[in-house]
Image (tube, rainbow, N blue to C red; front, top):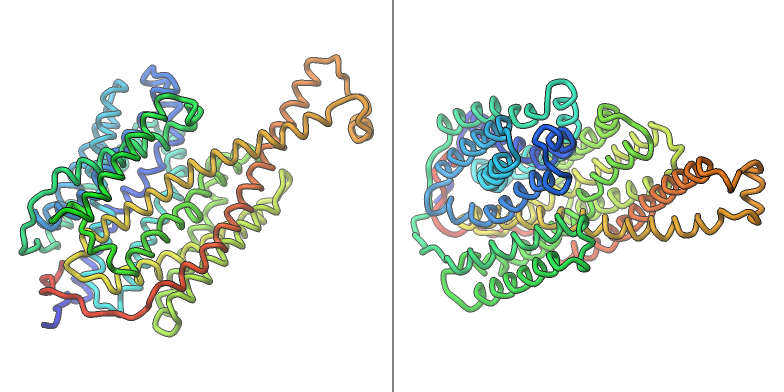
Length: 508
């Protein structure tokens, strides 16, 4: 039976509300970060307490993301999307209206739980309403929102906080949520799997507990000195036990929450591993670059946003280019080129110093964006090219989860390594601050070792220099990681096989 696809105009009407919803969720991953100090003052919270505004959102998203695939198959994709966008919009309004910390943390948890389904199901929708030859274009559109969202989030959040108040970081979602809600009701078709699978409560609880503990460990480890903290040790033990039980249950029981058939598909299995690694290489470095630009190079939030604009432009250019190249070039070759360009952009960042000019930052950001755009679209196409159509809901949910997990692991791992690089560099620089050092005598002959003010200025300069060295070392490390990922691409296959089962109705 030949699948009936909607007309191009109908695809457009379905794509717009889906992309508005997924972009809105992607932006919210980072938009609240810059507003935390303002929230802390307004809600009379400590620095430790206000971090739960971020943690609650991430934990809820980690728990609910794998659940979205099962819900879409059982209740219908349209119903899940409509309820999710309505809940996300309502929770956003609750965040903006909150007058105490407890309310905003609960609202952020609801926001993360409701938004978890929007990104993976939007990807599944775009795959299903477009014929296979248009999948690259569809994934380029999807990637534009999911990749650009975290990039523009801090800049948009900083502008709204400075121009209006931190509450508008959340209120901005309301009009877009209403537009997406109405568009989905009007243009999405309802569909659900004919086979009704019993809900695997044990599998879901084991995975949810593991993901929640793992996210808490990654999010709070930096602030609690990692495994020197009993709290982090407990999170790690719970996460290990939860993942162990999930794996054993998945491969030994029937009708499990995560279908093992997903990972029987070689492209999907390797692509999921690749997605975790890309989350570390392509996305985890962006927060470090933003912090470096503002704290070490002295750029304002708006200037930092403008410096990051070429990264988004590079991503757009690459995605427009790759949609035309996939018909003529092996997708694996595009992935390798994307990895190489991404690695080179990290090498460009590793050549910088505290006196780097804006032009070098603009060029490096553009190159980084091109590399990311060349990786994301081909990877999405190749991962789903051999996956049966009836498994796209679960596949999109798990694929989205792997990218989020990779991002979280990458941010924590790079930050951990960055602290060690900074400490080592600072120790080396401090050793040189002594009266018998000829270099110090040459550069600062009048330096007064008895002056507290002079020593304080020297210490501030040492910390600044050591921090830059830490950034440089991290960028060089990521460059090596990107090159090390190239052989993994060769294990993927590019052929397509027919999706089994009945096709989805037109428009869904």
